[in-house]
Image (cartoon, rainbow over all chains, first blue to last red; front, side, top):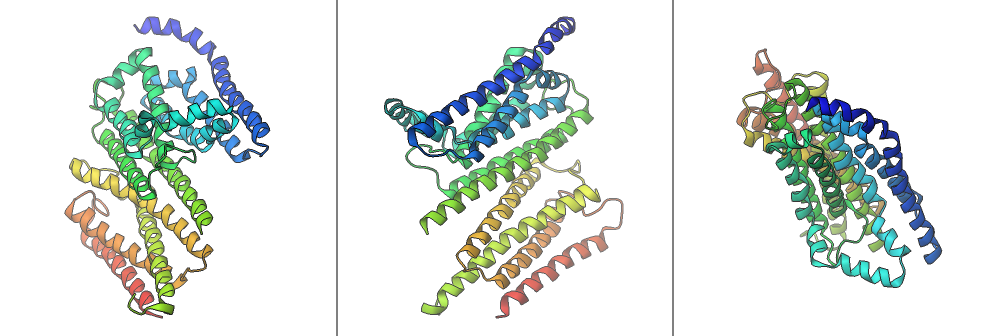
Length: 265
Length: 150
């Protein structure tokens, strides 16, 4: 099995620059096209900060999914944790703060816009963008990943690895959107109190999981083959990396509140 | 609130300022504890081996709450300033009170009741515990003094 891996690695890593650049430019290009279309449709400038957030998010998504990172995640618990932080926390911040849904709504023809609005108001989207639901999907997913055999399965096989990576990215984006996003999310956005409480609970559960992984290394995640010291370091990255993401989320959340209370006053 | 009419906006500003300061004070104290004692001095251990999971969970939640408190408190402070209803003295009093209260909470509940970790390992703990909790008391008293002065 190791032998097969060694053979596959070369071709796979040789493609890394192309894959990484392709993902980043596709994401960035799509957004820039929409910005131009929206500016032409509405005759208003789109915020450069939002564009900047998207470009940063696109680079982080590409970095998180790039073959280099996947290889590092395969070889080392710290590599996995770096990928987890990139895809699950930092890339979503850029993506969400870029307000892609607002951009898309403004760039679309009226028919498409109605369709999007109906989608946003549909029951599944309304449910998924509740902060409490998104938090369970996001942080709950991490409990499943690290406390069951899923982690080892994702280390050994490409398909579960890809699914786990995509789940991290999508659930992280959903959570970030629901707690701190500037985009519209359904007809009844969650109150500030709901968002703050969910943020604290989710970040607390994340910190708890990180300490648990630190304390129970090398028994957790079940079946992993990493040395204890490596796992402890990965758990510390998870703990402090989570702090950085939590503070960033809190700043985004309260900055949104600060702007909106000024408008009301 | 009983003072009615013209004093009540000031009283409200004072209370809001106190709360904003308290949020920042408690959160900062917790952050100082983590950065200075855990990271720089490495006196405390991240986890000391005998800790039950329930204590780890409460520690995680407290840690998450303190970060949000600092950020939320600072934005509230900025909001009060913008509305020109900030009472700086009350904000300071709140900050000192909450910092001291957190220090005491950490010294009594985290170190002793939950047994999460001690101030320092391999030494006689009594002077460290006394210094730790006394600093909490001093901060609380300073906050009370500042709050009661007009």
